[in-house]
Length: 346
Image 1 (cartoon, one colour):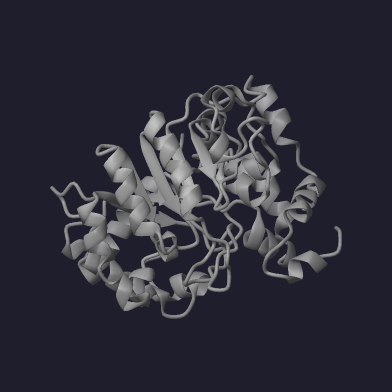
Image 2 (cartoon, rainbow, N blue to C red):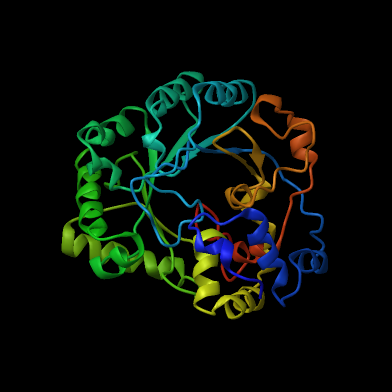
């Protein structure tokens, strides 16, 4: 395999990552889709606008496909947010999914949420909160109340219900801070039976393997968190690690790359392929460029709609008729029970 010089930097070059993916000995993703009559892959509709508010984050997680961290300077501007608001105002977007980095670290995060809610009082607004941001600085301590006021659906990563596994993936002390943050969210009503305040957790495997069955894992998480910490939540999403960015670097350095890619290929599920999230979602980069998903965003694979590659140039007709760009990393979304930002798909 080619020299890993580019991977010595924690921020790998997208072109180099794509070259590594192409070097894999497994079949192309296009050929698998063609075998089941799904190539070229087309959108079903555009319901979800997933918006990356910036790559700045208070954590540096080992599996992060965004390469987020405290030193990242990429941040969405109010001007780009205004372009997003125009799309939300003029089109039937049922869900706005705010992600990062830590989206709350964008200085205009709260203004943006308030403006979205003014435009559409009923749409689902998701914030992908890493939990520890709530405790990172006093200015974030009231986030649970802010989420509640604007009826935000909170989705938070918690690798495991024990400190050792969580801290090994996300950093020392992250587990204890996450537990405290979850208790703060519970205190204002999130995840409590009978409440309409939704709190969902996300599980990512810690190594080169697929996640366990989501339903069984959810039951185990609910019991352990309730018994040990009196914490409640709504659903657990089991998400497969996609072979890009920091996880790709781990796979190559640990010599697990080919085995993991083969595992994804052998676990290919046609039903999951039919329901991949890129078929009803557009991902908006921090700079406003448009992608089929946030994984393609990290690989700099812009949508195949030449007249609508930026949020300021949104053309619903072009975006709904485009062909979705795929590559071998897409096997991660179609393995086993499938994987999306909302958990399994099959």
